[in-house]
Length: 265
Image (tube, rainbow, N blue to C red; front, side, top):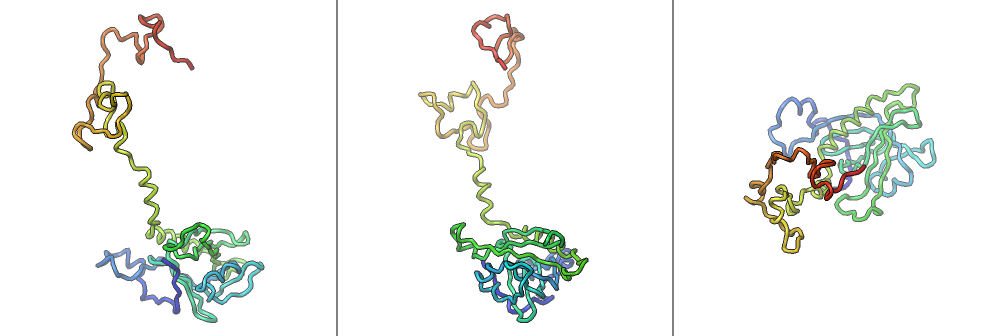
């Protein structure tokens, strides 16, 4: 998957409204319109000057100098957070935009821009996730989404939290396909000794070879998923005369204590 250039702004009928999506079961889960979770206009993007030329799509946006030498601003931006991707579109002076698949969004988080204004930080990978091989080849563009009228003394920042919440939901619809590998690493090894049953004094000989080593492959009575091995689940009742024994060791003064080792702390 890769970033996609957008020549014209999306229209309302390109999406299924979230309220409509939640109110009924869709007739099909394939080929339908993407669900629109959040739509905001009049936004401003603050981006790093040196990162824009690395991607020809973002380089099409018209920028103006920012307050800091290393940043530029992209004004008049409209945002659509839908179930397929995140769309950023600049209307003037030249209409242009980008559709960002959620797996390419490495980070999104709320922040304080200039320590005062509620904003949204988005880190976008500029690489095609299907072709990049080395970590050193990954290039990330850091984008700060500023609310409308952010230059005023009391800007409305509610939209920032709404966008953040919508992106959380949409990102969950596109889980990382490589995340299953960690789960595979944690799978139980059923070939390990006793993995499918208990090893007890009564059945120890079944797991050892003639040299006293554990065999590489263990078969439990009944096969995998069958009955547990002999002795599994057996409760041994205390026999008469065992009152002086604790964990196999006689209490002090009991018979045989001279041949036992006592636990010390």
